[in-house]
Image 1 (cartoon, rainbow, N blue to C red):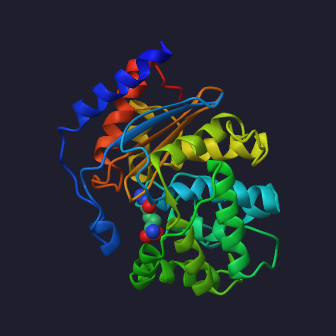
Image 2 (image 1 turned 45 degrees about the vertical axis):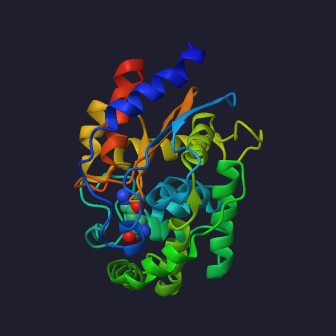
Length: 307
Ligand code: DON
């Protein structure tokens, strides 16, 4: 079966490759300028085998796929109770950049929308960590999930910061509700550095495989986070990972997943594999068009629906 995977992946890519609908993210010039025709898919098993096809070693920014991993780091660094007190676990059913603060308390509904992800970013590292220390913790943590040293794409980060008015507004709202007490600008800058980390589809599959392997990177053998943290993260991915398309995804794909606006999608099947796809054209929800098609196919062809 395993030796057939590369042929299977080649076939899947050539089928979905015919679809050129959707568009690269328009709200940040650096993302809008991405090559829209890139396409890749990777399976990484929990015993460290990697099967890929297409553009699997091309770097792009991780964007919102960083959110579940930063959430894992915050839960590890600060413990469940302090994190849950500040960020909920309820699906918002709204777009990723909605304000989505709970009535009265201002607590973001979940860590996958920007409000929750910025709060989560503020909760990484030791309490009282300065902005640079938080960023260092997040980049170290993402690198441990990937099993190699990752770096920030400065051009994307600068471009994002120049267009961060909405994120700055959300961060100031969070600060006004005392969801965090850190300087909002430092939180937004740190969160955007987190989003600007460069990865390949191969890296993303390995990061997903680390979740599937209950927190241990299959290649390095290193435990990155605990099992209870992974369970929490996968649950939130299952309900909130695909934003306002979370219900469609749950019924049609049924794999805990997360997408990013640079065109990546990851899925993690506990005890089995991590999957990653890369194709920059996005649908109206901000999810990769061909990535969603690939996951639908993988799920139905291999019976991967677990939700
Ligand atoms: O917060 C932002 O605007 C982005 N840099 C991250 C967005 C993202 O990937 C949303 N997901 N699909």
